Length: 153
Image (tube, rainbow, N blue to C red; front, side, top):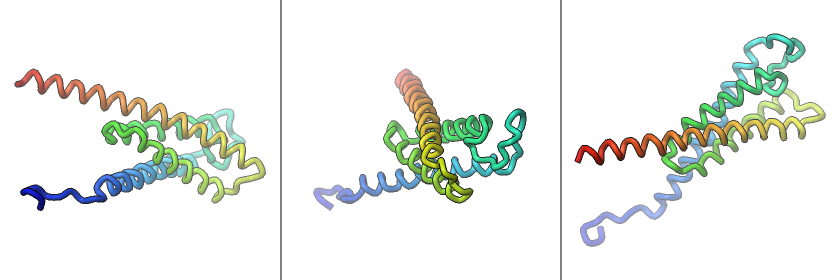
């Protein structure tokens, strides 16, 4: 204790960043894997009868499912992040790592660089749009909360 005050831990900010990075990367990976498992478990519909593998890039339904799932997950994580939007980079990294692992588990094929590029672009677009929505909701609700409590004084 210095002057009656407790000294802060020297690694407080580093441990918070590390914990946030692990949580966000894990959330991105888990979101991707859950939606991809759903796609593997359900048959394709409509004109996409030839898309039997369930890989999300084989059908428009798969692309929209992954985009919606990642966008929703990113919105929730961005809302919770309390304006630390840069943590969404870890969410993107987790989703891309999970995508790569699933791709190599099912067999990458000979055009895997193109598949990887398109998949990463879809993940990036979905997470950026979801993160923006979560950030705007956080800022808006925080402003409403402050206005409501300012008037109560």
